[in-house]
Image 1 (cartoon, rainbow, N blue to C red):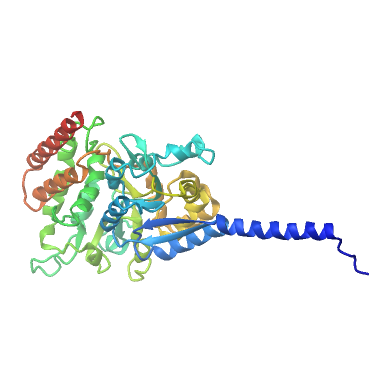
Image 2 (image 1 turned 90 degrees about the horizontal axis):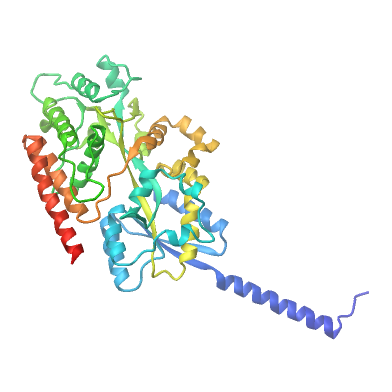
Length: 442
């Protein structure tokens, strides 16, 4: 017998149904879309899409609308335009070089706004990040972004060419002296026609005024640090790249460049290495997926050789900044915080080839197993412990890097004295720093 529905029960059911419908509507209405701009290379986008899909599965009330901008230069121009038109994204992937412009435009939040909020990070979690990355994520000592992934430079070498030259393929060069010795042994003009058929080590020299000028300077900085130098003093009143360490590092590059007669060799090392014409070169983990396709080459990655003062490599990466024009800054922070989780970092590294930004990610069993199966990536991860980032240059950073690149070009291609060209570049850089200081006092 069916129970009769009394008017009161009917009213309660109706209210419940209405309330339930209302909840559904509220839940639907509560779904927030986070706009995320980035410039990842196309080979990384599938891994990024997987990452975003997983975030949305774990956060059903949040969606991420990712927008790709083809290059970093185009991205900063688009961000500047968006800030002016009040259409900035909620969160964007940026280079550390952008921080000065974005902070001075009052466009992005200080990370303390979120780190010390109710959904923040504990001090021990923040201490788990590699320090060099947090330093690069800051501007004038204040954290304005968080690192999304890390990179550094290692030594890519051809084990088969080592064997042919009588070198132990399991013992890559350990220091500058061995780097020069191995480079000489691995350089051949097989038929005596005056053209090099194989080069031992590629010094990356490009026109300082061209698009690869800053990339050249970025690769030289680890050698400056290995000799005990710095790019600038802590007060940012004087550049230091023309110190004795700078002269030592640039002399090494100049001497190897001319000993190997690299001016007669192709500068396209990305093609020379797989062609087995180049035995050693500097490179980062972003190219590991490409190298895994080189079935005809027995290749390996080694840490950068140590210099006279210490072992060092350069650490870089991209950073996530939250914009003040965002209508959903807390939701944007939820997205950023999720990417920073050790589990997310480990999975992102395994799929993208980038390095994790936290020590804790390297303690995860699945990631440790992955590193054992991918020793090249493990070398890059292990190097994070002695990686450095350039000391921040708050004003005229791009111009000062260009002056450093000009000195490198003059000493190698132009055969000029390393100390002379570094001193000339330093004088111009210090003048820029003085101008910035005078402007700040007005």
